[in-house]
Image 1 (cartoon, rainbow, N blue to C red):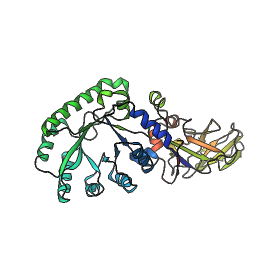
Image 2: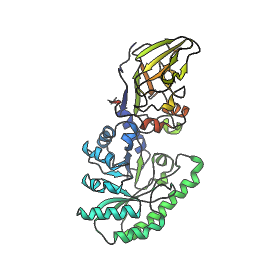
Image 3: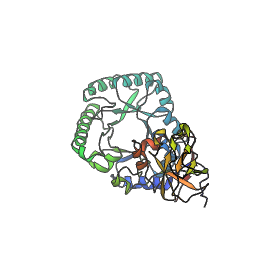
Image 4: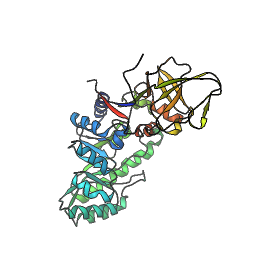
Length: 371
């Protein structure tokens, strides 16, 4: 029986997005704001589609990694505040033009942003100050407070509207002591900053797992990858959260191989017995890395695993369907609500986040809304 899916598509389920947002909101106080992180094309789906829906249902803030991602949201009509987590000084002019809020993480970026804001005749332009509390990626150290206050005392072109940090291991219960240390350090730093500033900016440190595991770190706002969970990475989270995106395709052709026949480039697979294969129109140009080839990855057909054989091609994969009753035109799933992206990714030595965010833009996006 042929499926409703006729080509390779990424289905974006807005009812699942609503469910995840509602569940995560239920875990924080009504006074705590929710910031939705929609970087990397909304974790592989479509940032504009996700942000438009989340804005409609009440999210307070968005975050992206780069200025270009923030511009995409503004051009899609998003008016909610947008934080840029890792802006580069070369893009500060555009950041101001599109009313984006930078995370300022070093004396260099602070100095440069004040310069650009002043040249653009800004007054109290909103910025977030990033402190490093243990992730050791980007952020001021505690010893940067004096430098920050000194810079602020000499300009009215900017204003700190928020102070943030990032938890390193909030999903790992064996690292609880380290996470508590991070929370306490952030509290110490922000207490000093509030006293020196003379007012209280928004404070935010929690990522999604921090939101769920450390209520004491909710502060004034939490950051959540609302579309990132439900993919089989953590039983605790996945029991309550639903995958927003499903990657599906169809069987283009079926081949019957005799012993000694080979499949694909470099004859990477050679049949030792009678083998039935199915060719599927998705490849490494679509986000299915070559590391998934040679039986390190699989797709689901009729509820059964069909392992990828041979090398992944640019636009196609071939899978072993010897023991699956299927035909050309049947639907296949790389990941969906019933098949774990995490299991596929684990077999090839990676995590589901990498699989999700690698899905190319040439894969057609389809919006599903069960509400």
